[in-house]
Length: 572
Image (cartoon, rainbow, N blue to C red; front, side):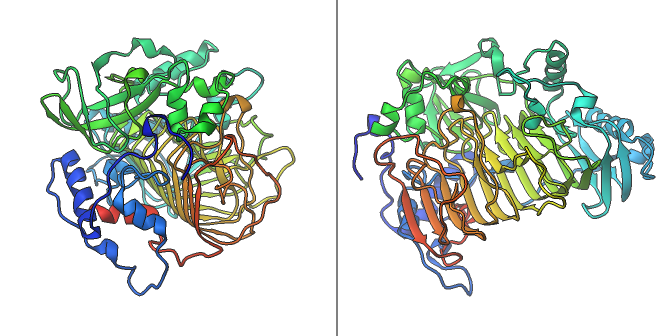
C-alpha cells in the first residue's frame, strides 16, 4: 500500500502471533468489557461443517488485527446486548383486550393498545399481549417506557391494520433543509419506539413548525453536560483514560463526543486518512458538517481508577485536537421491543419522491438495546427505521406490499445495530412514476451497523451520502434494481471500512455492490460478476482508494460465509 497517512490513520495495532491465540485474544478483550471470563476459541481454523470453500487472504489478515484492520471493521458486538442470540421473555402484565381492544377489524384499537403499553410502563415493564386477530388502528402506537415489549401471536396471526398516515395524525413534518420535502420520508413510524421525553420535544417542535432534533443531543448540544475529558487512544482500544472518573460507573450509558477541527481532520480520519481525504473540499458540505460532533453511545463496563473499559472497542481514534469527552445525552429507551405481528397500512399509491405521507412501519429513535423480532410491514412508505438508535437488533423482519421508498433506513448517527434474517419482497403493483426505491439505507456518519442473511427481491445497498463508515453487508441475495439517494451537501457516499462479504447479485448490476472504485479502505469479498449500468458513480476521493477485492466472480465459496457470524465466533 502506498500514500501518506496522518498520524498513522489506518495502520495501528500489532498482529497476534499465532492463529491459535486469536480467539483467546478477542475473548480477553470482550471479557474485560463485560467482566466475564475469557475462553479461547479454536473453531476459527475450521471450515463450516460439510462445506468446502476458499478462505480469502483478507480473513487471515483480519484474524491478526481484528480491531484495527484497515479495510474490515470489527462488528462482532453489534446488536442488542452485544449481539445476544435471544431476547428476554418479560412476564405478561397486560392484554390489550382488557383495555378495550377488539379484534373485529373495525374498532379503533390504538387507544386501547396505548393504554395497555402505559399500564406496563407504570408497572416497571413487562409484556403487552395482542392475541390473534386483526385490530384496526386509527392512531400511532407509542412505546416510550423502558423494558416494555409489545407482543403479538406471530406475524402470521396478529395484524394491526393502520388507516391513517403520520401527516394526518401529527401534521406536516417539514425539512430543516427547506423546500417542500416531507421528513416522514425518512423519520417516524406508526409503531414508534422512542423515550417519552424525546416524544414530547418532537411534538412540541412540530406544533411550533420548527425542526425537532433527531440525534443523541441534537440542535441543543451545548445543553448537555461533560462528564470528563479523555486522554488519547487509538481505534480498536477497549479502554480510555479519563481526567475524572467520579461520575462514572459500570453499566452507565455515556456519549463519546469528538468535535472536528478547522482542518476537518476528524472527517479525514473517518474517510481513512491520506492524500485523497486531505484534498477533499469539506467546507461546503453543510449537511455533513451538521452531523458533527460525532456522537457514539456506549455502556461503561468497568472503572479502575482513571482507566475506563467500554463494552465494545473504540470506532475511531481519540485525539486531543478533537476535544474528546464523555457527556450526558437524551435519556434513551432501553430494553423494549416489538414482536410477532404484522403492521398493514391501508393500501394507497406510493407518493412521489420525498413527499411521503408517513404510512411508515416501525421506527426506533434514541433507542439503545431494543429489538424488533418476527414483524412484517405491508403497504408502507418506509419500513423499518433506525434514527439515532444504537445497539438494537432487527431480526426476522419483512417488508411487503405495494412498494416502499426506504424499506430500511439507518441515519442520524445510528451505530452498532444488527439487521438479520430480513426480506424485502417484490412489489405487488407497478412502480408509480416519480417514486424512488432505495433498499437498505445508511447515512449520517452511522457506523458499525450490520445487515446479515438478507433476501432482497428489489432495492439496493443505499449509502445515502453523509459519509457513513465501517458498515458491513454480508450473506445477502439482491436483485439490484434500486438507486441510492443523498444531497450533494451531505458529502461522500462512503467513509472507510465498508465491507461487502458474500453478496449474490441476481441481475448482474454492479452499482453499490462492487465498491472498490468508490469506497476508501473498503473490502469486496465473494461477489459474482457484475457490470456497471444505470446509476454510475464516480469516487469522491482522488488517488489510491486502498480498496481490496477478493474472490470476485464467485459466490457462496467464500469462507467464512457470513462475516458477522464469523466475528462472533472469534469471541466464543
